Image (cartoon, rainbow, N blue to C red; front, side, top):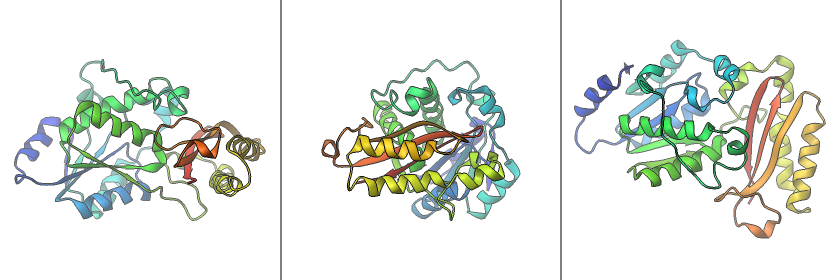
Length: 279
């Protein structure tokens, strides 16, 4: 497994690849868990070469404290990636990715104006900037993203269209702990008490699916919001049922063929998101 920190070193490796080689790419911010590794396994199964990037992207963080506290473990990450037969790990510095301040502005109507887009101004532009730069460096055949960040996945698909990248975007299922908590690097920051509380998120999402059989969308959102807010350690930001294609919040089950329930909340000092497909 090769580890490159400079773009020109990666590009030198890329130039020597056989023509028409299929490259599977998994962009990450490190502190890898089984969710990331499920993407790596899929990339390994479907491509000639697998590239993983590890880069904590500063321009997608609204909260400086969140950036500073983002968990990191470079040594363990590299060990896991070697065990999963990754060919190249690209680990650029901030200076390598942003020799000058980023000036690119991307617009994704609807997608970047609701939920995460509404609550974290500039976040998705920061994601679009770094992903587009990584795509130009790596030149992958396909790139793999988890559906836990479903809104981000839709945004990346729009980015590929807008920039005319010839890249297949593959969305992979959410990987969960045995108690249902969606795997996330941020879970490591939960206290023991908070970790015991956290599975309620998935529990309520599953209840939303059941409640939708007897109640309409707005009532389900109200009931689920109330259930989550019962715990004093939880500060709910949103519980929304939205159209899976447009992310527009639904008022009635009749308004969409495919709907997803989305939740974002603070558990102590850790912000967690999750979702579940409803129909």
